[in-house]
Length: 148
Image (cartoon, rainbow, N blue to C red; front, side, top):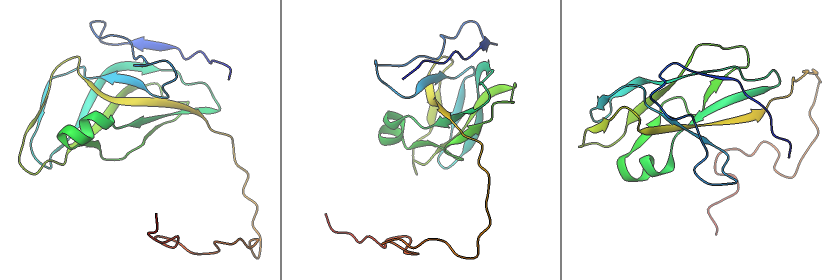
């Protein structure tokens, strides 16, 4: 797979650049550019201290970090948060604390989310009178059953 270059501007130069935690990871860790406290069931827009120029034909998807989700109930309200290629503002994450009892403290520099950059082809819609049939058909939520 070919690597792509994504220009990045650090608004907060004290923060580390977004980075992969391990070789082969899909998501680059995003850090908090501000301190905050999320009370139970509260949501906050948290700055990540960067701007990106995502190339045309790609988009950024801001996603939760699994460790924060399982250990603290922290997620992203609009997961994944979509960053279009023509957006040049600061990257931010809309965090939510789903823990019913405990506050979640965010310190400046904490890894709070991750961004995945994916290719997004331009789609041409073609209206038809009927769609082709499949084995699944119109079976939706739960239609494949609960079997293991």
